[in-house]
Length: 418
Ligand code: PGA
Ligand code: ZN
Image (cartoon, rainbow, N blue to C red):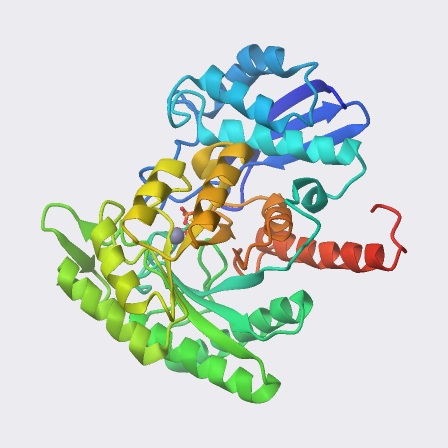
């Protein structure tokens, strides 16, 4: 029962250069460090837990020092449920509105990491729900737009690719990197003003409409399939909250120069699913519109992941509501949206029991932290959304390669850590 001996909290900077919270949890023989990721203004879900105290990050650090640390010191780091419920009690609101979801989730995950380290276990094994592990397919952001970019980029936030039929995680990661590189070359030909720009998640940014971006992604995927024999699914994250104008009740596509009503949005997204045989569509509608999601899910749920990110916001109650209305057949989980590891697991279990596939995701502002790779393997999630390039994105993908090595070596009885 490795007890928590110390908790340290400090400011560091994320991949966008924005201040974020880093927490160290020190136990007898164990150490866990987590730096929180952060969504972009304009793309963070409006129903997710706020990141910090309303008075800011410094206040959150003060709360850790004066309120959280005194309550957690001495507790067994392995008692994740108790620690997470203490964080909830200290916060005192329904959605971590007082201390912030980044505050609670950093502590929660750092406690799990410290406990795993004290037990000399890799985190994925410590988090595992049974003795089976699987590797998620990486869902890679290839062409960016929306709130993650600047200038005349596409309106939709992410044009995504996932390999189908890569033989192992290394091949899946390498193939996504190859597709990303070839898309860059194709953009150089298509857009004469393209100068190699990338967005917050290291997706390419070019002067394109969404349909032009999809055409390029589709062509490159076909070429790489011819070359390698590996198939692809193409996906979109519309992050439609940002497109939605609640006054005019229309989705505004500024780059394309037109607007769409909810009905027209359903028609437009349906036509893209048909034309590009889309495998994955995230947040096609704004986060109050459970019903349009349900229409799309009814129409295409058998052949395409109709995924809820901002709609469910990793929140158990919103997830239950979406399940009742059959709004999605897949959902994103982000631990800092719901605030604790236990809360994330609760949401995961609700989804899983109801046949909704769960995909773990990075945020647009990221850090070195690779806990989501361990969650994906330990909870046997089908996909991980991490971006393709950038140290902070590759931190998760490279961790999957290390986990793969650890697992193979352990299976052969050769690896001392396991
Ligand atoms: P965010 O965007 O991390 O900026 O919220 C990611 C997403 O919408 O999937
Ligand atoms: Zn999203």
